[in-house]
Length: 108
Image 1 (cartoon, rainbow, N blue to C red):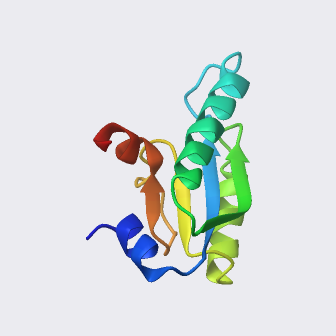
Image 2: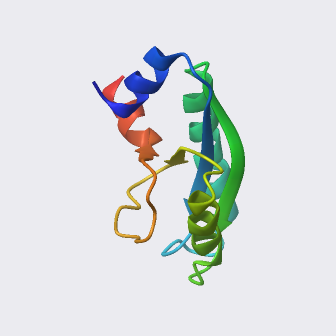
């Protein structure tokens, strides 16, 4: 059973964070990409009744300032999962599960 199915079966509200990075994306396309990713994430979120988005983090440059804030908030237990579009597994320091909503979209 995958992580999302576990959340669905638990019938418990799950606090989630959203992470989007525009790293390696043309600056002229960044806002369009952010909007498209948010749309996908919210479509995914509305496909289940028990995910509540408590915070969003958007890195619009290579500074990773929002990623670092995400990690700090994760250490406080602010959320149990991170929703994102695309693979962010190469980033380090996060000890909560990551759900790439694009993987679920392609499997449905």
